[in-house]
Image 1 (cartoon, rainbow, N blue to C red):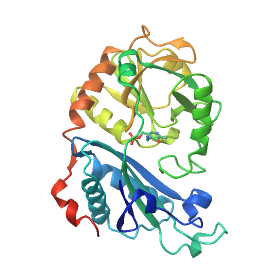
Image 2: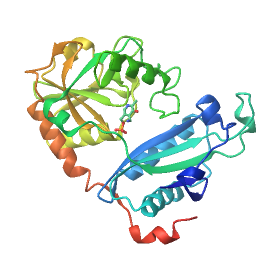
Image 3: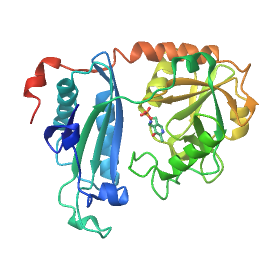
Image 4: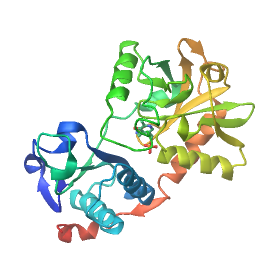
Length: 298
Ligand code: PMP
């Protein structure tokens, strides 16, 4: 496995960062998770744009242009020769001193890992999953807008632990006003009377690339969709509920906090959306040129 570290492709064993890196010391940085499907990097441009938007908000200046970073990502995939992969792009404030002031962090650290993630097992798409509401709220927009995909995932991790303890694979997070925000690593949607609803991003959610794809697919299919405020009552009484994410894709939810959703099976409209997404994931994105592997080091 070759990993891109600050402009060089190095073997996994040599891919290290400084213990003084503020990404490690303070979670001061941002990241992206991107899927490659049969050589197609799904919505790469959208992921790179989201990364630059996160950087802008936390005042981190990425020392590469958008085009250079896109190319470095494609080169890393080509160098690893993987046609199906999960890419982790991480940019931290870089090495500094032990104080929190980033003034001494001279150069951001840029890492691109071409690997894989543990995905939901294929059977779960047939049965759907149960989720529970976590007692940990999503970080309020006033503190750190969750649209920033930052290296601070502690509250999501605590929610995830609660979910695991309850025996479910994903946990729902509310905002501090008690409205539905999102799950620990997925956005959430519901169908009611044929219409699609999802929390608007200011409820405290990441602007998911899969979420945006689903909203676009709904528009193409003529399904009415709204982004707004949702309470648990809305979800409990929905006809269908599903999650979206780079790892999850479109995952049906059949139980929330012990309440059965619909008839307790993955809903028809959800499964149709999953099919639409599966067609999109191989066609929409940037193709990797695997012949460039030899020149990948830059
Ligand atoms: N919310 C959170 C908190 C996430 O970390 C993610 C990414 N896994 C998502 C939603 C889904 O976003 P995307 O569709 O871009 O993967």
